[in-house]
Image (tube, rainbow, N blue to C red; front, side):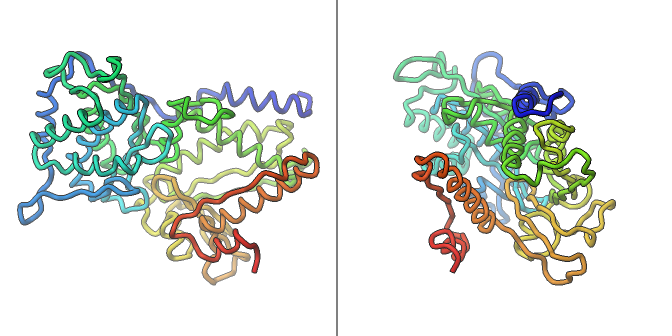
Length: 434
C-alpha cells in the first residue's frame, strides 16, 4: 500500500465504517411491550417492591442530585422500578429517546445508583429533578399512581394506561408516542438485578428498552445523544451504539496525535510505548482494551503514517480486587498516591506514569513521578490541570492557523469550570502565568 496522505485517509475511513466484527463488544438486547398497557401488572410490581422502611417504621426519603439517586443497593429496588416508569414519562414528553445509567461511580461496591440522560446526552434537566423526587418518594402504590397520572396531565399527556384511554397520545396533536430508553450499567454484582427492574417497569409502561449491558457512563450518554440525531451539531454525523463510540473517539484520538511529529517515526523504529490505565477494578478495563483493539489497525506500518501509537495496558480489571478500593481516580486524587495495583503481573515500582479512571469510567486523572526511585508523593494531573493543558494546546493551534488563515484570529477558546475548581487554575486561564 502506498504510504501517502490520500491512501492514509482512505484507510482511516475504511476502518471507521467497517471495523472488524470481533471488536463489537456489547450484546445489545431489545425489550418491548406486547399488548395493552394495563395498571394491574404495574401495581403488582410496585406492591412487590415497596419503599424500604427505617428502623422507626418511617419510609426512607430519597434525594436526586448530580449523581442521581445513589444509596446502599439494598434500599434501591423500589427506586429503580419507579425511575423506569419516570423515564417513560420523560421520553414521552420529549418525543425523543432518553437514557438510564446504573452506577454508583467512585463509591464502594455496596452502593449503587440510577441517573437519567436527557436526549441531548446531558444530565436530566434540573427542573425535572423535583418531579422525579416527588414520584419516587410516593408513600404507597396508589399514591404513586395518583402522582404519575397528575404528572402526565401537567405535561398535556393523556393517561398512559389503556384501562383509562385507548392509547397514550399527545393531547395537542393526537399522535401516538413512541417511548424509547437506552440503559447501561457498571460491573457491580447487583447492577444487573436492579437494571432489570427498571427495564421491566418501563416495558410494562409500553416503552421499548435497549439494554446495552456493561458500558461506561460516557458511553451511555454518547449512545443517548446519537440516538437523537437532530440533537447533534451539524458537523457531527450520527454514529450510534458502543461501536460508534469507539469509531468516533479512536478516530479523533489518532487525528489529534497526527498534529505531533513525535508519532511520525521511521519504520525501522522498534520503540514501543505503553500507557498504563488503573481501571478501579471497574467497567473501564474492558473499554480500554477495546480502544486498544481499534488502535491496532492504526499501528500497522504505513497506515496514516502513524507508527508510534501507544499500547494501553488496562490494570485493576473487574475481579482483580475490590471496586474503587485504594485505586481509581477518587482515591488517587484525594491521597495523591499511586493506586494499589491488584493485577499480579505488574509491579507499581516499575511504572513512571499512569492514568486512573473511576468505577464507571467517567472521570480521569493522571499521576507520574520523575524517577522510579522517587519516594515522594506522586505528581497529579487532575481536571483543572488537564483543562489548562488542553486549552493551551488549542490556543497554540489557533495561533498557528492564524498565520495561514487571517480570520482564524477571531476564534476564541472557552473553558467551563465548576464552583469546585482550583482557584489558581482559574487565575491562570484568565491572565496566564503569574
